[in-house]
Length: 106
Ligand SMILES: [Zn+2]
Ligand SMILES: [Zn+2]
Image (cartoon, rainbow, N blue to C red; front, side, top):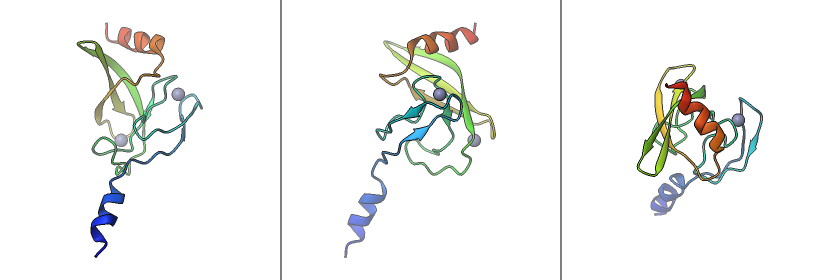
């Protein structure tokens, strides 16, 4: 009878805090941010964005930046399984770091 409610709960955003595996920065999770705002490294935790269902948990290196209109997209590659992933730049991301990463490509 309450299965519907349970289903709903399972798909709610999780707001866990995390410590960056690269630089040690502590990030307050808001359910959306899954990468470090300081060094921009991420973790391979999602299969689909936000689902946290990946068992890989490898560090994901920001390997490039793409600009889409006014928005920036960060390209990632997982160091363990090599999967590629793209994430929208978050408001609080360090812009200097974005510039640095974008230079890697050129
Ligand atoms: Zn970091
Ligand atoms: Zn991976």
